[in-house]
Length: 137
Image (cartoon, rainbow, N blue to C red; front, side, top):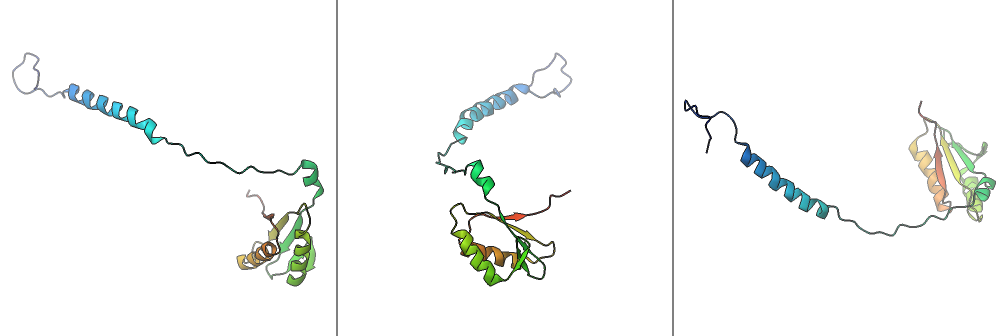
């Protein structure tokens, strides 16, 4: 159904906007109804963290384990063997405020060597194992 402007030379070349507006209004109503239904919330109970007092945290000095490319392990810059490392870690794991362990690896150290030290620490009961890296420039 095209409307003419009074000139009957041919069909009108403009689009009829009325059906387009009708479709847009229907889509708007559909989205307005369905949008609130799509935002459903799931209630979960997150665990609460128990933080140590700042005074306690400052008293505990972290243990630094340095691992060279050759596989040599250093406990606070003192060379240790894997057996000594296991025994020292088991002693440290028994302490009440357990000290954190910082692992520093050489740039060329294989991940297998670092993983073996982390596995030993976890087997001995150490819970706070972290990695030290240089910030990217």
